[in-house]
Amino acid sequence: MSASTDHLPHSVALVGNPNCGKTALFNLLTGARQKVANYAGVTVERKVGQARLADGRMVQVIDLPGAYSLTPATPDEQVTLEVIEGRRPGERQPDAVVAVVDATNLRMNLRLVLELKRLGRPMVVALNMADVARARGLTIDTAALSAALGCPVVETVAVRRNGHAALLAQLGHWQLPAPAAAAAPVQVTPADPVELQAEVRRIIGLAVRGAPGAQAADRLQLTLDRWVLHPVWGLVILAAVLFTVFQAVFAWAAVPMDLIKEGMAGLGESLSTHMADGPLRSLLVDGAIAGAGAVLVFLPQILILFFFILVLEDSGYLPRAAFLLDTAMGKVGLSGRAFIPLLSSFACAVPGILATRTIAHWKDRLATIMVAPLMTCSARLPVYALLIGAFIPDQSVGPFNLRGLVLFALYVAGVVSACIVAWIFKRVWLRSSYQPLMLELPPYRWPGARNLALGLWERARIFVQRVGTIIFALSVLLWFLSTHPAPPEGATLSAIQYSFAGQLGRALEHVFAPIGFNWQICIALVPGMAAREVAVGALGTVYALSANGDGVADALAPMIAAQWGLPTALALLAWYVFAPQCIATLATVKRETNGWHWPLTMMAYLFGLAYLAAFVTYRAALALGL
Image (cartoon, rainbow, N blue to C red):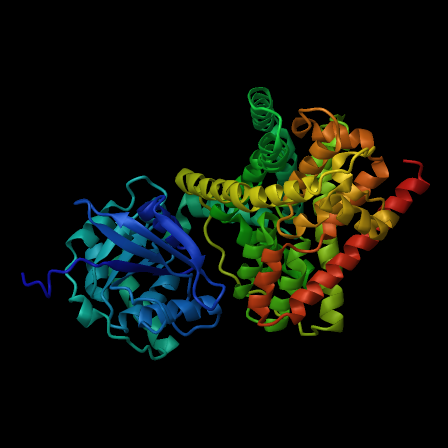
């Protein structure tokens, strides 16, 4: 074969409907060889990785955002179209397209495949979830389907270890036009939906046999939906699921947290023993270990929270929860489609805000963006865990753990506050009519162990990276501000009170004294604007330097329990229900809304609510004699 025709694709783009298993297939193809970022100029996630073929050669794989059509209705679909057409600035047009389709739902998925075919791009169809289709009694003739579509068709099972073997083999032997010929930009013209659907029916008639509705698996799906989508029992099930998640965050994390805590304490003691007293030892023990180490201990709780979110997402439960809550959310002015972005915000407000791109109406989307930070993100979890562990007894209340109940109450407070704020926004600034939710419900699936492992690994890597970069840097900066300048001769107070940090804390104490915050808390609030969890590390650094003796980092909880009153702790918990957003969230809101008006509005109203909630909580606790 000539060099112009014997060409391996250097890059392939995965394209498919949402819920077709496209991202799971991407994870299987690329493993750890992937990078996640945003497309230039837009906050749409860009995933790129490397797939290794049988002969050792590498192929770049691009996971494009999910799309139902090449006639874009959302920013996600617009980016997908521009990348495939080769019109995306700074993005090289992929050599070929892998159209990922759900084998159990060809009637929906083949519409996009036919639109892709009209582009004339080299394409292979990955018939994903082929095993589920067979279990439901569907027989798909891949040869007939390939002939009808005019492109190769291979079966894949993205949740199995070698479920991508046929696709890799196809890529390894695929003969494509030379890159120069394939790189010319193409322009899509909208397809007639009636003609598309007629063609889909014709192809299904040629290639598909069997009636899935008669199979036991489908009867089980319908039975589950009768309970999960029931207007009463469905809400009970959802509440039970969420309650279980928050109980597990404390119950399951105790042992690994203790191990991390003991390891950090041992490291601090070892350095204190083997290093001479001086600035370097103070930097390592009081700055790095007391600061970054105090945050690292909460990694197990964050991973447990992410584990449940990934399980609920992969199982197909989340879209059903969105559908179930549509009416209730409509009463406060939000669409049921806002449920998934808001649930994502429990992990982090940034991806939650990015997920609002699926909301078509701008006012509904903006209202969701403005309340997303009220969902209790995982960065608050270290603060909650520290305060609850220090002030709430570890005891049972019936079958439940009291600390888990308090944590659940804090999450509920965030949700209720979001509903109230959304109701006000939609009736004062963002008035619009209610839009009923139209949503495709994917089939129930067992979450893939590989996807769960990769998702947890990615989250752990990001968290540890934050601890090793942002949090470490802020801890070192705070250590410097807490140790300079040195106390004057004859000083009677602790050294930190004469430092820059101590002076800043004393100045802010005048503002925060009415809500019960001391100067140490005031210091911790400042770096907490960069990343919420830094507040715990900042407290560790401040108290390590403002108290006497060694080993302060591993004794932060009992130290603040001895020095603070319960009203102060409750006020700080109330503050963090509404705490002003971290810089990353405000920057994301700025990009999503194309200006500083809404991020500044968000920061102002959250600060006001946080101060008001802390003031009321503190004064009420004092009045009750707590």
